[in-house]
Image (tube, rainbow, N blue to C red; front, side, top):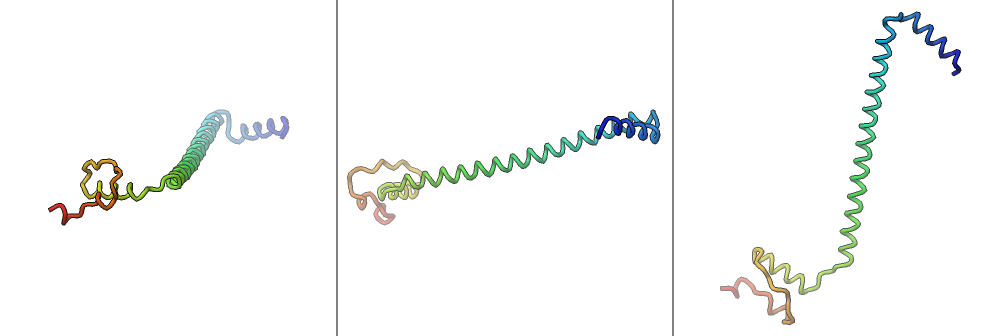
Amino acid sequence: MGGSEIVLILVVVLLLFGGKKLPELARGLGKGIREFKDASDGVKREIHRNINAMDLDKEEEQVVASNNERHHPTETETVTAETAATNNGADVPYPSSTPIDEKIVTDSQKV
């Protein structure tokens, strides 16, 4: 579109709506465009927020998977964790050099 076509369109709009209605139409058109831009920006932000949340979830899964690959609990660590759970959170000393069988105390032995 060249300059002459734009001038022709403006003259036709001026003749159709008059000089008093033209500022109101321009204001309404400006508000409509602004609302559309705000709505589209909101949609873009929501999409980016969801994409970032998915990326963070994937990174967290990778970290957990890599940690699980690096650390496999030994038999002593497993017994210590089980003993701590049965002691209702009481402190369990770190496993020493004594055999695992001696560390496990059953309920019947406690009485």
